[in-house]
Length: 537
Image (cartoon, rainbow, N blue to C red; front, side, top):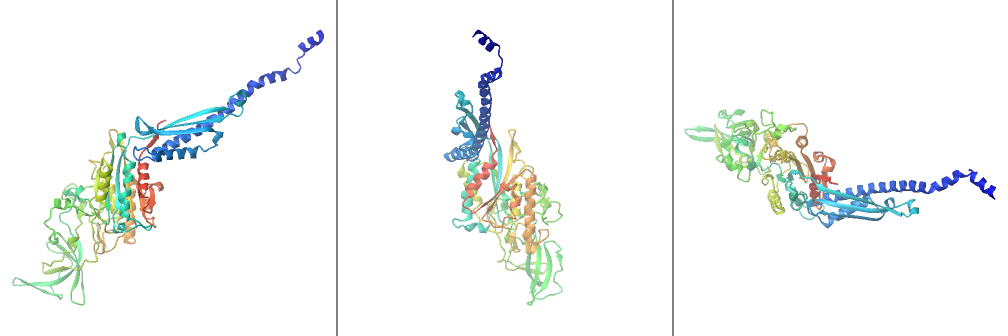
């Protein structure tokens, strides 16, 4: 017996198995804990991503600093999408989100879950708890936003889907932009400008006398009779005579005669360019014009041209350069004055009696006054401004005129540089144009527009049709604005062909189409896109 015991004590066979068996338990615990912890870390990473996405989505969906049930639901929707049921076998998943009681601009989120263990449950550890904290807020930032709004005649119509008119839908929907950017509690400053446009814009009140021509000439088609002075009395004949005027400027440069043509009745048709002597309101001062409320403009010639011709391209100089004084005529705008084009009384000058041929087929109109950038303390005051700017709904559609004046109102280096700061208290000011139209260009030959009457004036240069020249100019103005740091958002309202306006948007995500029923939602989305969001934890 003693020998047997002694042999067992000295026998080393099978020791490795015994040692392995003894070490297996801590080895399993070590490997199991590593494996289970790695799963827990991966689950925590997914939980954190879902939490971050949720608070960003919730903050993005807020109108200003107003936290609503819908915003909370939006946050939960994004959390559930990014951390669906069953992810990593998680149990007891919870997510809570609410506004920071100490900061109205920030929302706080917290997510928790239990991850079941694969091996550690053998040692009494059935699950590992994971947690993620996430906060999001809108950065302190300042925004200058100019709304360029189509107020042409077609806006009076209902959209193809029916219901209220497009202009009424616009008035209601624009409030969404204000609500989405109402961050005044956070110290941010947001200013809004409004440029209603048709075939011209009403901007004179925002400018100065030096910005307008005093000696303004138009072109028009007129009848004439050759008249003779006989002992102080004028006798006018309906036939040609040796006294008919030759083509060119009159001696006092008060009118210009072009293209005499005899017709069957013995009358002639004459294209006449005339100056202020032929104006029905020739005694009106520039100040009276600017402050009349009917201060629509005739666009100046392109900067760099020696005449009033308008190029199909728009440069930064076209946006920014301004007349230095009252004599800087190449940088001055004309007064939109249909009455001068439609002057119907007779006037005898240099032996010629002029009559205006019927202008009933000439389309005219002046939209409501544009509003330069300003802060609006309440939603009601903003809505009142929108209503006033869209009160007149008439005319054709010159996208290029609208976007050009939107850029002029917004530029920090042009007409309104003194008021348009690049930063406030060291914080930058972002610049945005929200351009909304309900259709394609309407550039009729007999439309009395900011470019004159195309049939008579032919000021718009370029190749192709008149419409294609204006499209080129519109897209060029958009490119010039974007090159100056302006972000452009485009809304095509009830438009089937968007090829002409879509390229104006900064990116594809800055372009929206609407049937009219969702305008407020679209304006809200744009407002949320303008705000700068960031994770704070």
